[in-house]
Every structure is written in C-alpha cells, then in structure tokens.
Image (tube, rainbow, N blue to C red; front, side, top):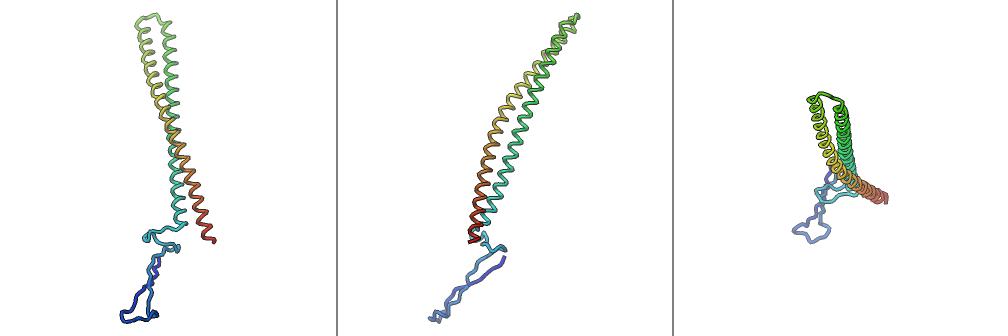
Length: 167
C-alpha cells in the first residue's frame, strides 16, 4: 500500500489565498483501489467477492447433491437388503415343508420369521431414507439454482467492472 498525503491549512496570519497548503490523505492498495478502511469497494473487488461467493455456493450445491446421492444409495441398499431377507425367509419356509423333524421344522420357521422381521426393519429404514433423500435432492436443486444465480450475478458484475475500466 502507498499513502498519498495532501493537507489543507491556512496560515493564521495570512489572508492571501495563495498561502493555502493542501494535504489530503488517502490509502490506496497495490492495485490502485481504495482500501476497505475508507468504506469503498471497487467494482473489480466486488466482482472478485461475487466470484468467490458463487464458487462457494457451487461447492455447497455439489456437496448437497452428493449427500442426496448417498442417501438414495443407502435407501436402495436397504431395499435390496429387505428383498434379499424376504427371499431367504421364503426359501427357508419352503424348505421347512420338507423337514420331518418337528423341532428342526419349528427352528427353520422361527428363523424365517426373524428374517421377515429384519426385512421389515430394512424396508422401513429404506422408506425413511428415500424420504430424506427426496428432501436432500430438493435442497440440492435449490442450492444449485442459487449457485447459478450467484454465478450470473458475478458475471454481470465482472462485465460492469471491465466496461468501466475500459471507458
């Protein structure tokens, strides 16, 4: 940063306007734009901030989409698990019909019932996960739209900054 100093003062004993000295201080950053201490931001700085914000929003949207995809995959896995458990329970039940020993038959049917309960739990978790995934997909789409708007805003600011710098 460089500092320019101009001071305005009058000599106490002088009535001559030629005796006015000027000393005006302003802080200028290395890119010749005013420092934020003065409360002003150049168009280029504003465009840079908007670019950074748009990038951050894009990353947030991407992370939200990945979260939604993981939730959907989890739901799919739980639904597959439920289907596999139901298939296994059905196969055990079918095989139990051919078992002549009552104790073995009852043990097999009890195991099949346990598998059906596990399948029911997995299906319930899958349904809940699908609901969460749907909410996360909606959230991700909203964030993606916000990122697109931030990118358009950033682009317009950049265009304005370049136009003003060229004139």
